[in-house]
Length: 273
Image (tube, rainbow, N blue to C red; front, side, top):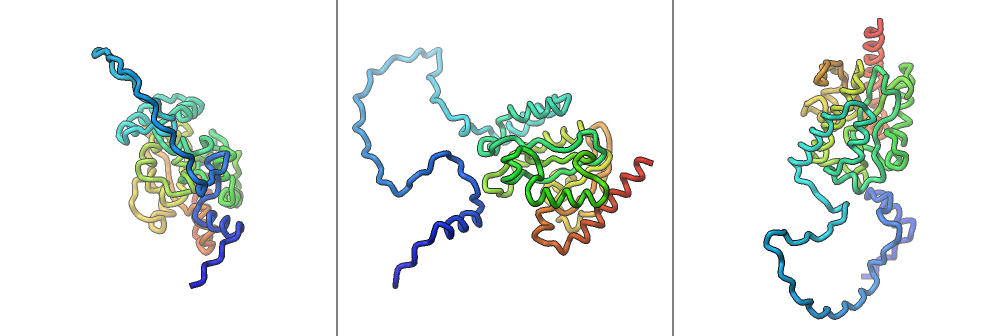
């Protein structure tokens, strides 16, 4: 059989982009076809030193990015940290210093929130993407531009709305966050909602809806239905609708999303009367 043609650079880049590889995690390229350097001969063994039985042996240093925390311990730590945050500024600082979620070590930065924290409506998506990871703000890519147009249709903009995500760090390659990652980050977004204290909570897409509203049904069944969300200090009205990224892939559902937006606008109007 004739050998397959060598792919061009453009074809390789298209393949990597389709696979979700859209950024480099290192500054310098690595030639994985290069011949390995010869391994030097082992050094002569150093004389053993008697260890003090009352002192533990020294632990080898571990890079910060390789430190892992047991899932249960990470979730408990997140709950305790989130509970102690008295303000949004304090919550952001706690999240920046939190090491219980491995996504923090592969993301560029924390994506905390955008908009007006005094707004009466809060939108919550799933996780940041590449553009959000670069800018440090939620919903700034293609789906963010669509969200801006969606809320503008009911008289809102980012000065009249507040926007965040359940997961504040971008998963590598925009992969779906694991259930463990979601559970670790959940106490932070729950405290986030409690501190913002909106009149209306809007969950965007199935993952954020299931995480925050405690349902296992799909977005087709849950969208447009009003649910009471208990922040711990107050019960607010919550509703799910489609994520803008889903509407970009399936524009035929924009009609249903428009129905949800009109219902949100009506509830906000009644609440302010």
